[in-house]
Length: 320
Image (cartoon, rainbow, N blue to C red; front, side, top):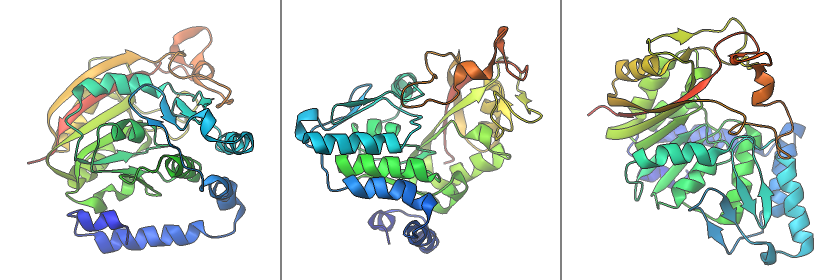
């Protein structure tokens, strides 16, 4: 059993442990899909960083002079093996990783509204490579559990945290559909960039509420459409070229979803149009990005002709 499970109040510890044990067993299979990311991780997991700084926009793990030239080349190649990098920025032993998303901008928007993180138990659903988890680590939480079902992101985080050695940060190959197993466990839940990928957003929010301690804080960040009416767009096939998007709400609609799911004191903290300063191609993410998703003749529309995306940030309190 993961040591942290014994510290959580959930009555579903055995089921969680069984699920994680099954995932651990699968990860040891010598299949190409697993080896693609496992082997790079294993090749550098002996390396530890002396210098850590999670307090600023760039998450810094290690400094250039901590490694030999050969070790640094090895780390650089492993970081390239984990491309594309979606969240960042990072500096790893002097190697600058400029991710697709300038995630420091999102963190700067939500940080003023965060409750005290010190000593808290936190979930980061869809944690990706752990950028936000490392930013949380600066505030000394007791435990942060990342939910990340994709192998690439899972091993990216495992590699970074193998360098950083943060025992209070854990990422598991779990999806948002598993959050309800952690009944009554979390003081704070981050649900960022997830809800529009779910076919039943209210059911998702109900399960998130179930996972939280009474009076806990939920932070939701979402793609949205402009407007003040409580409505949502349901795209025919894709939205901004993404096929896995279902309901794209206005801020008012998302606020109502959270209220209907039992959250109280729900507030829209901010809303802003997306742009190619915050999401773009880089040397570490060389595929299509924001500009490719917009109508080239009218930037107020997606390539499909839907309203161009905004991003909204909301905060609510879990049931008492």
